[in-house]
Image (cartoon, rainbow, N blue to C red; front, side, top):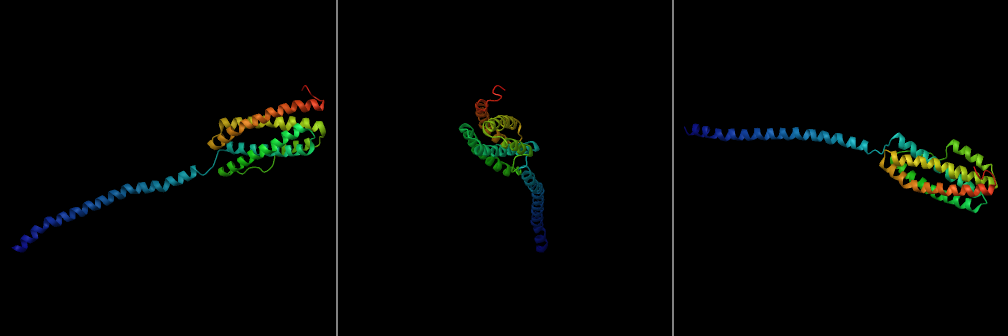
Length: 210
């Protein structure tokens, strides 16, 4: 009889124990079901973030940087030519400034392009090289006037327009910020070039009122 009593009295404890086991198992299953989606999300999100932060930029911004690089190279190469050929102190001073400031801008652009995974041209465009060849055939006051007109005014007008568009419409915040920062310097170059154009036209004695 004692055995029976003992057996019956142990059943509640056994049932309670199994109940706790079942609850624990259910809890583990619930935790697993919650953690599994989280783990999946963690596996997916970093991939998406890595793609978003990969440094890739739009074709428009890439094209802007490449054109800006070619323009900068052309400005520097033509201005080095002016330093060699011109005897005009104002032309030489302007040319030296163009070499210095466009070289600095080109270095900044190269760093920006590298951070965005963009390969920049290392030289002026074919058309720009052709214009440089035409310029190099001139001498004296004729060279000075054409340097001021083509490299100084015309080229800077084109570059200012290029940078104005980028400062307004670039998709990439870093590209837009650099274009915005550089634009006032280019606008100032244009103003100086226009003054130089006036003086070199007068010195050349040709097309002074063009």
